[in-house]
Length: 81
Image (cartoon, rainbow, N blue to C red; front, side, top):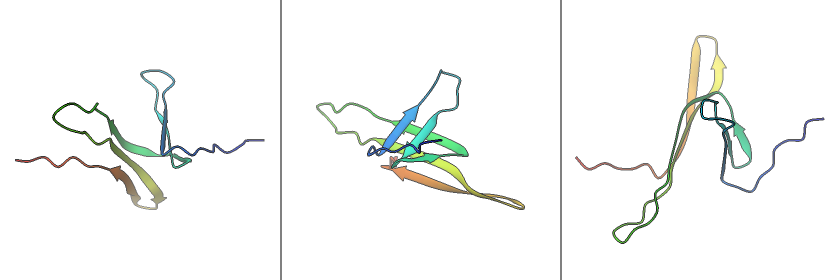
């Protein structure tokens, strides 16, 4: 009997080796059908506090003629031009 993954963590990333597909759990739910994943964290220094950046783009539900994606994103960096 499979026991569902339960966690109180916001994000959990498991990587078996450097070439494997990462397994992501967001708010305890596994994010499957990943399209694009980004995670960036940088330590705070004397000049700035850097927010953690998370982007998880995944296929919502395959449909007959293609697919739609959903994006979970936190703290998107705004670049000044």
